[in-house]
Length: 604
Image 1 (cartoon, rainbow, N blue to C red):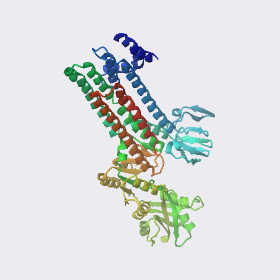
Image 2 (image 1 turned 180 degrees about the horizontal axis):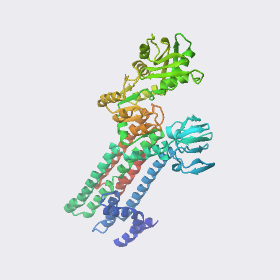
Image 3 (image 1 turned 45 degrees about the vertical axis):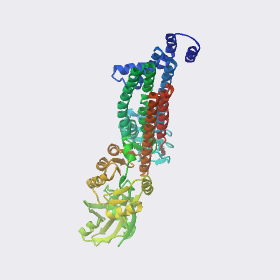
Image 4 (image 1 turned 90 degrees about the vertical axis):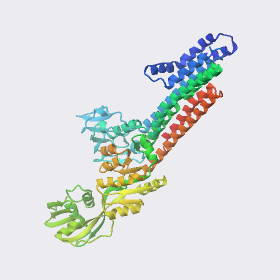
């Protein structure tokens, strides 16, 4: 109201210039005090070319033009410029705050409280006060505060905040449970295995919060651009005020145009909207269960050309099972029975598959004289019979005439007292999501897909044929996988996808390391650049699409902001621009750019 009254008085009265100035100074100081204060503090700290300083000089200059001979007063323009600048600042803060709140809501996995059994009491404490090994009780509807193992109870877990998947996960006694999930149905008693600071929820939140520290090339460009662009425009503004003024003597006109230069030159549209775009892209990816460790990786993901996969645990389930039993001199159950007993004490995945196929291993059979030969198999005495279980090399060593098998998989041969008794086929299931993932990568323009594995050639060939990868290499040790990746690196930006534990060296060597299905794995989070919070390889194509969309939005903002500013600067020199156009080139462009940047948060 005071500002409106001041404008009316200026139009319809004959007050002196200084009286108008005093009248307009009141609303000017009300809306601009914070800006003037920030500008003064910037000068004291050597930051003279901040947007607050530029806006302060421009508006104070507009106030001073009215005292120049033959010049019209610009008091209303000065006040309105400062007012719109403050509105723009408020809008930017609001937009960024809403963006952060949206991400915080999407990643709402930080638990507030933990119920701990201490003696006969159930004590409610902060999660960081719970010690490893203590027992916590999780009621239905509560967030899981700590990583641990269920020791009592059955329930279903809502994992949408961690993995982006809405399908509940069943859990029971003996299962691992990760912090950040929501307990849906039953009461669970859990023995904690990690401190709160090392829990899955804490690590994920730390990754998301610190991802913005690794700036993308676009963000780094904007930072360098602003440092060069702003001083150049300020120097041009000074030249516009002085040189034509000396030639024409119309100082008021050219100083006014120079002030327009200062208003337009504020680079806040770029400095704010571009980082906000990448922040939104990182948040949108997190919503889909994709943790990207820095906005600098968005550039690499957008240019991705080659994707290299580990096989076991990445394209396959990593869970071995018996798929065929071919006995020779005994029946199927007896063959499984003997193999399971011989492999009773082994922790190898194949041994576990044999024991799972014959779960009744704790019977009255005696198993003695167990001898294991690395790379061959195991020989043991079962109920007085010498049973050998292993590969063809073991059969040849003991002189048993083994037979080949037409089934694809790992062939486990069994011999009893040197006589061949048959063989068992063990295979790893291909993930349901694997084939669609390869198709999705081709759809987004990935030129080459490669599979590397330490498995045998026949098994690798079968998996590669079913999935349609461009090429595969079998029988590789971890060092040989690194060699294969180094061979492919010159062909373009390369991502390696692995389990993040055994493949840490090659994850680190690739342009982008992607940990597949490695939620809760310290090695995965440390070695990988991107962590997929479930075991779906189709998330890789989603990450590429999100990265490309984020880069596109950032480039749109850069082109729009620079284009409008250059146009208004040229109009200002020609005397065709007004202060209101300058305000739009600064505040208006910033608002539009921020609105465009927030689109990145809505990942498709």
